[in-house]
Length: 69
Length: 274
Image 1: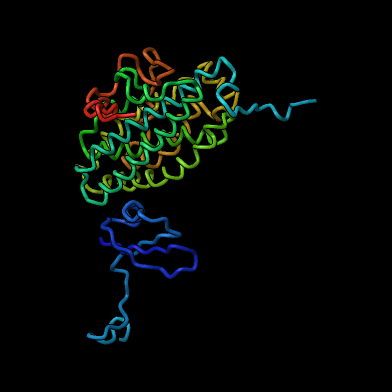
Image 2: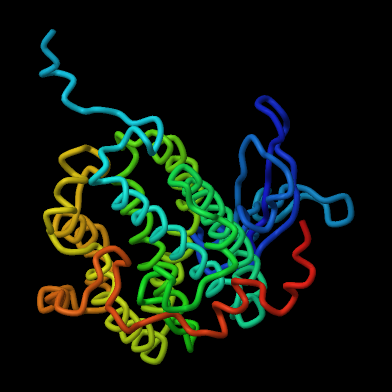
């Protein structure tokens, strides 16, 4: 499963997408993200399974069916 | 002036320790440092063999942590007038105090995961018993080590569960590795000897021997249950007949010579310039 990785450099910053990791579950995804994206000192670090993203709208495709129907 | 409430005497320097216990404290630090040094090598050896890239990166990070912890602990030995350079570069395998469970390289990924989970976990449990140590140089350093160790524990645990749930082959592999290492780890906590008890009485450590073993078995009971064998640990009776308490291992045992040669840096010794 692919997890997207998000971080903040400082308190109050917007969450920023910095990459992704492959992992079978949340626990390992967290450890992998912590070790893989450790080149900077983060304020916080988050992982989200890619398949949990909900598309709302796309210029080419228009409104996403799952949201508008 | 009564000092009944201030029974714990803190030591800021090794020279402040009671003469009879100074050697035991030095032994404890060297045992921990050597174990972390060798554990880092075991992690590093699997950088190129891990089942996925992310696990290799995690091992690189954990190896780096272990070597950093070892370096920090070795540096504490200067307080005891030790020649740290000779300790790091001049010893033979039989002079190492690393945990016996690390004497040979893990032969499979489940064995590496078991080391990560249970050996690293034993080290952390021992370090936790030093977080309120009356020996201040140790106390001041263990928390930073333990903070980093949280991610080692998370990696070990996550992989342990993944192997348990991955099918018969991986489950049998992690079960066998667990059975292999746990007896050696339980012995590592040492006997309830007089010298161990004195370290406890002086608040150098907050637990020794059986108390540490109980804490350890309690911490990992849920993982033992995962391999369907929560009670195998009850049959393990440490054998102290050949046990060297200062080195925390059986006499006539040693880590493999090839690994120690790498640790000493034999191959490129010529480049170790002052």
